[in-house]
Amino acid sequence: MLISKNISSSWKLLISILVCEAVGFASGLLSMIEANPWFDKLNAPLWNIPTYLFSPIWTFLYFIIGVSFWLIWRSNADALLKRNAQLLFFLQLFFNFLWSVLFFRFHSPLLALVDVSLLTIVTLTTVLYFIRISQVAALLLIPYLSWISFASVLNYTIWILNR
Image 1 (tube, rainbow, N blue to C red):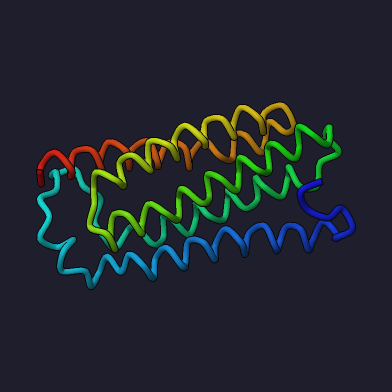
Image 2: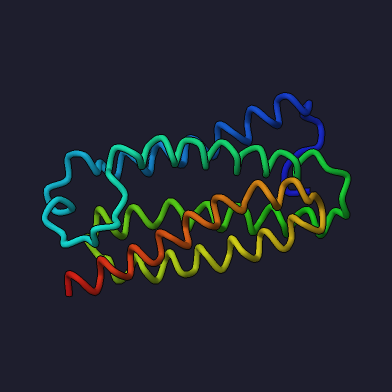
């Protein structure tokens, strides 16, 4: 097991959500979209999401991916399958966090595009592992996968518009 089995299900749920939300909070601190002069000067497509919507959308997404992880963590699935699914989940969470660093701190839409592409692939792979353990857990990742797919297109468009 990647993570201990001796924790109650309620604690696992709380930990799962808090870890995901903490990644989101840290990522948001690095982004500071509302007070980022570099970001404000970028050319963006007309279909770009207003900045005030990013926080509520991400808060919701981190919540549901936390619940998704909890469903895997508390499952009685094959130990190797479960461990690999958990590792993939944490890998996608790492790529998720890294995106803000690359885009907002390094001011590199190109590196962020590479990262979000990897994030999309790893998240899709995570869904494929999760579905073998819990269909609900896999389905909870679909809005997140959809959002990062949209973010990939947006990231690509911003990169093209600002080369």
